[in-house]
Length: 547
Image 1 (cartoon, rainbow, N blue to C red):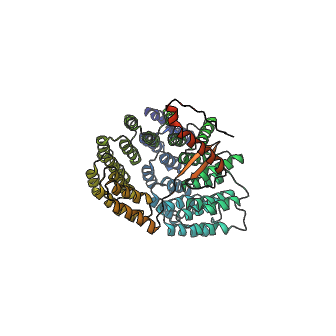
Image 2 (cartoon, rainbow, N blue to C red):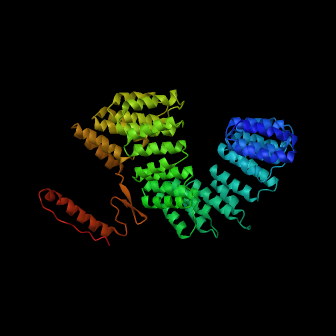
Image 3 (cartoon, rainbow, N blue to C red):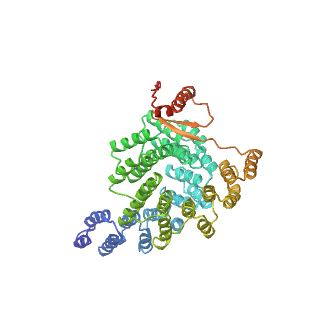
């Protein structure tokens, strides 16, 4: 919108208020930056519309949608006529990123002689969630009872979500069960299922879900998201497939959760189905869905497909660029990842702390120590991003892999926080590569405290001792593992066959097709044994029964 376009509307001064308001609403819909907001505000004052609560409500809502809440709050506080409840509600909603201000404003409602309505309470309870202020939440709950709105659907749903978010799931369930003699709307059931899923109580979430007489897409999505968030991707995909069998069309959130599970498992076939569904229903313009598709393809080994989705996106967020950089780094394409970061800078997209984790990871994959140092330094100097423990971990891993063990230890000592197991694990792995038993012992000393039951750490230090001929120390470590009952964690893998993901754990024979799989494996071993005969001119064709 051109700035002078607003000036043309000054002619509206001579028209009636009823004529000016539609034009003003059109202007508000066209605002896209702070300059437009300032001009529109000037127009409101110039035309005398600043005394209208409805106008101010729409103006503050527009400011909020463009993330100019501070300006909106300034306008609200200087508003001359007393605000009505709708204006209060809109301002409380706009202060979602300033929850303390939102609560203060909510408390002012009754002080001015107004009465909170069924919109006031949910907005205030969202602020309570952000502050994790359970006592304040209880006080607002009491106010809902005093005003007779404690049985309102919107208020009840907000209360259940508040108690769950503040880790008071029993209070949420008590509130839910207190409606036993009343007809419970599906929205309340969904809120309670989501509450259990949020705190990781998936057994109760599933039990409640299965007892529902009416379900909608939100019911299914709450369960799918819960399993995905608790790192149970197989279960999340199972629920997603059941939803399909019930002919329930997945919404964007359900597909995001399912794609997250696909990324975790490498379930490419289901991911492709979701991609086709998105295209078929015209959802391809949704940035979060495209980001999830990039992540899914990258983690499923299809980096070319990920790049195709990325290049076809007209709008890219910082998450889009970061996901693509991380995907390239995951595939060992470190230089391509750094080139992508250069494109990101040229596009004037400001990186965040997650972006730099991906960048430092890319440098580590390729062993670009100098570039790693450079990016680590410009985080703060150019982008004012304070390095977090993850950035230190990436940098220490990069230096350790490249053999700069002393520099890695020095960086560790400069960290403003305690090193975690991942950082000490990097140093332990490096000490194994470069035969540094002293560093290995130092790392192991910390790892025993941080993850005492990790058998892999003991095995690495034992190997270091063995490689240096220190058999006594190597044997003692093995004995410690046996005496303390530390067992090697079995490996596991996932395989997707005919749209179904199968999990295989080392030593586990419970799979329904175990015998057939074992027979096929034996045939494969036989073929491998005769591989050297092929090199000597012998050739034998093995046929496998794929039935």
